[in-house]
Amino acid sequence: MDATDTTAASTRERILESAEEVFGRRGYDAASIADIAHASGVSTGLIYYHFKDKESLLRALIERASDLFGPPTRDTLEGAGSAADRLRAFIDTRVRIALAHQNLVRILMRPLTDPEGALATEVLAGVAESVEAIAHVIETGIEAGEFEPVNPYAAAESLFALLHTRVVAGALDAPYSGRIASDADELAGFIARLFLNGLCRC
Image (cartoon, rainbow, N blue to C red):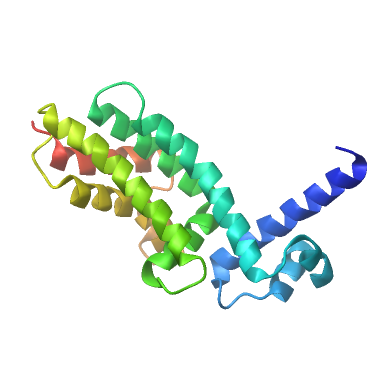
């Protein structure tokens, strides 16, 4: 990659990082290309050089999220150990990524309440894939006698919601927010105990 390519890639990345922050803070519909240009310190023309339109920016962010969340999700849920061990590893990994990319998580959560919005189909398909993978691990735990015979898909949906509630609610800056753990280890441990204590046969 020559110097020109390196500069172009760096500019594209800066635009994407700004779009992630602006979309996450203001919402996709309320944000404009001009807002992103201001946040990234580039012209609107340069944004249109790298991205066709606002939806192209959103699509690039969804692809980034897939790269961030996809491999770790598969590695932990398909890894070695008991079903509970795999769920703990998954929870820990997912919480760490979500806390490090809170604006990106907020962008991904919006289609859950606006299924007609931009690229909602792609985002919802990714959520369904994650829920399916979690449910499979829970089914394995039920078959092994490790978990109570619950509906694995209802349990998987519940865990998915638990994992992202703190990030989404954190955007509200609620008065009680300071009383909730923001440390990844503490938050992941709390979610794992809360979820697994209700699921485990003990």
